[in-house]
Length: 551
Image (cartoon, rainbow, N blue to C red; front, side, top):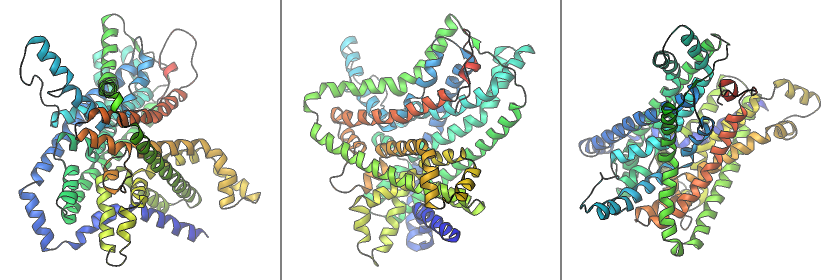
């Protein structure tokens, strides 16, 4: 029985990793034709793709660090009016898909947008008054304010857990505030900042909506162009492999930073148990801190929402409400089906890891979780390549993957199973193994153990897992664009198509619906952060004793 369970674990992991393995395996058929295509790409488009991808990654990486680190320092090390509110307000950009932010800024800042129109009419000016927002720097701006919460959240956690005691010790030794920040707080947060930046850069590399809309020729845009416009799956596979190599490098950086975070946490947790109060700010300093925390919230969430509301209200009477119902139903249906299947797979994998612990099982779990770090464009190529190979043996394979929801749900599961698995595993971590032994002694084994003992205790973790997968599926764009069946457009696809056709009033409706759905995980995360605080003390202080540790 245990051998059968382990075999089924391997089968599930193989299904979830097939797209990645197919992309890598495409090089097994490397021949003279493939070499010629690669040489042609190296002489034409590859330098542009490489340069644009690296430049965008560099600019976005600097941007998320420049925005996320000061915000984390301000809400952790300092005390000023509104600090407690900013702790969760700074998470709001997580609810905004990056491509929605791109549509909003384009509508407001472009040549015919309200800002430049008002400037020309008010001051009698002519021509373009602002740089073109659809550019490399515009994409970097969007990513910086959409993805900085990755850096903010991890840096805030690191600083809340380690910095207060050492900052207080440095103050007692006479170190001024600037030196405490420079030589104590920032070095402690450095591994967390590196991990957060790596996660943000993986999102940048996986993005298709922003770079396609802004005309930035990155690897992701090149993969879709090679497959859909040039109808060349070999070129698409080669580009997908290069993008996958960049993602693997970032994944290694993130895991290395996470290991350093654990080591630093162990060392500094023993350094001091003394309570430390944040530095109180008043007057101009408090106003400056308040403004620095408000700016990312405005740029990453509030202003894009307002910019999208303007065309929505202007075109209210002509909005496609009946079509919107169909788009929403398609999105909800795909999200619900995927969330249910992802939850079942996550329960099976997590239960298998609990029942069969060991290095082989851990390896299987890591393989199953690999898809979350893989861009949607790579997953699409990895699914369509085996379909092309199987057409000669089974002609119906192409129909199942491209003309039904099977291929799309498969891509979603590969992409987001790690989200469900992480939540279910965190729930299992709170269940002692002695509980299983007691249940077995009472006759509960196998499926009965999972249904009658584990499930009631894991229900909250499973609901959170299903909700997170549901929201991620609702916002997913690259895989949906290619693999969706006919007449099954989703909110994300319709927002992209209408924005691409300059119908931003119509694009605002599905875009704002996605923002509303995206608020669900932000609310869950905010509640988790607040619930993780230790007991509050009496008094007027608002120090770490009240703020506690971030989740």
